[in-house]
Image (cartoon, rainbow, N blue to C red):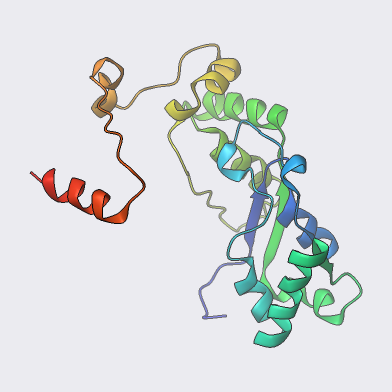
Length: 200
C-alpha cells in the first residue's frame, strides 16, 4: 500500500494454522487451548493471531466499528466467516499468500538446507523456508526471515541432522555458569526496588 516493491508477503504457519486457514478459506477460527498443539516450532503455537485486527481493519475498508464487531464475534462465537463476502474475493490485492508446515516438513527442510547450503537453521525458519519454496516465482527473489538460533531447539536439530546444534561462541560456556535466582513478591514497588539496587 505504501509502494514497497514486494510481490507477495508469504505467511508460514506450523500445525496451528489459524492464519493459513483464513487466507485459504476466508474463515477465521480461533482455537481453544485444548486445540492448540505443542509443536517443535513453539513460537508459532498460537490459538489467535496477534495484530491480525490491523489487517482486518484494512480489509474491511478501515471501518473500525465493523472490525470491532467482528472481533467480538471471535470472543463470543470463536471466529468469523468472510468466505462469501465480496471483500474476501479481493483479498489477493493485499499480496498475502500462505502455507503450513508440519514436524516432518521441518525436519526435512532443516536437513535439506544443511545439505544444500551448509547452513543450520532453526525450526521456525524451517517452516518459513518450506512454505516460501511453495510460492517461488521465476525472476522474483524470495526472502525468508530467520527468527531464532538453532541452539534453542537442540532436540529437533539433533533429530534432523544427527548432530548437536551449533552454539554461538558468546554462549559456549553458558551452561557451566552459575544460575542466580531471587524470589520476590509480585509487587511493582519491590520489582522497581530490586532493579534499582542491581543497576551496577
